[in-house]
Length: 264
Length: 291
Image (cartoon, rainbow over all chains, first blue to last red; front, side, top):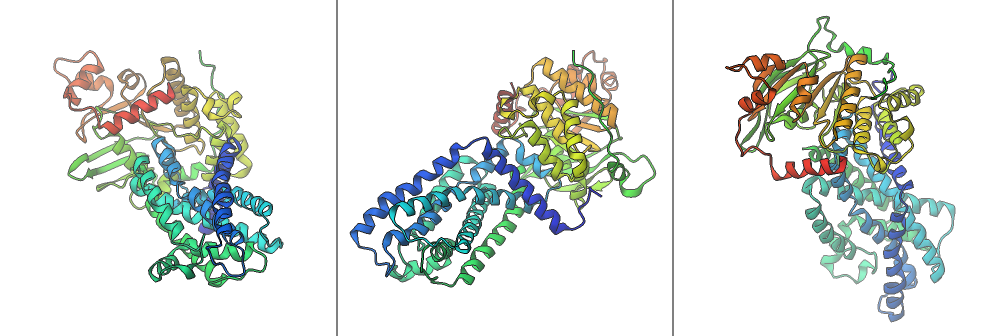
């Protein structure tokens, strides 16, 4: 009975969770990573956020600027950590780990999605940091359990999205040096061409168009809606969820196609 | 000095897979049919044809860059062939890759276990990925650890293991599902002689107890001579010589006394063979990590 799982879909989900489980078990043996993740968002909130909030240069309507950027900084810190996720698979490739998994009957999409989801769960530590900082700085948060649950879901999906994107880049460039270069080049445009630290309304038309093609914009919009008390979505939550879920699915499919390249 | 290894229980469900393709003839477990791989204009493996009967220990020898690892990667479905096909336990590597992956085990040359997990966890993840029945997982893992002499180290992080222990854990991991063919890429590279002997002892036991076919590449001629039923010497992507060690020695005129002479004769003495920079640096990095 055991050799061929009855249903390919349950087999796929089961294997995905096996990969996620073991990626998370690795974390148990090394906690330092969780702490280093906290540093960058803290700087953005405490320094950048405070300074710009005082300057009063950003017009964010009824929402105070610090409240406005809290979800943006969460999305940004998820992006910044996820975009370098691919370095891990390059490392695992230089060892023989990727090869051994690829020679096993595990579905390729499970290998890719399982790793992405583990990155998603890890990034929840950043959400906790942002909530603690927001609380200290007097940001008016929405504490309803449903809203919190949605924040958890969006953070996990967003991190899965960007870490799978990163994994795709790793599959293409295959070496650490090239990967680091490309990672650096990508983060800033993705961040600045989004609504993370300013509303898209104040952007020039061309940048606004680009920001509407950027999945990070929809992540930020959804996070802003659920995190802040009395906030409403710019694009509609249905559209936000649809965009980030579709992009994630698309990237996992591409990643599964490209992942075997790592073994060659 | 190695204590006799505890016995492994042959699994019942793999017997179904063992008679794949429904043939009643004792078909060869490996059948390479003009297997070819090109990288750009370079012909890495040139129309390789070869059969290996079930239960054999087969050694692939050759200088760096002769095409050994490329052959292994094609047989383990990691690299699609440019031309030709191969059947592993009756399954085609081209269009039955999934079935092939279920009946093989693969120990890559470089370190393939995860240092940030314990030995037990490294085995557990593969037990789950290969769909071992949940009720059997714990017993099979305990058996595999005992068989490889790692029972006391099971709960330790692999990062703390010695090179020989890492290799034994890798073999345990690759054989947990009792594959019909175990592919090993330079299984003893970078190990000291005692660790090398221990690894071989376990491989021999595995073959005796479960009838696992061993297909390996190696640079250690004395190991090939001691353990392989047949060897093939590869040169520029082709098989330059094939047979038992005795046959190969007899094939030279005058008859060769050592396998070294045979190797030099067939694999050439060209100093240009030495592998690419990347291969060399991987080799050395592996040796460093294991040593």
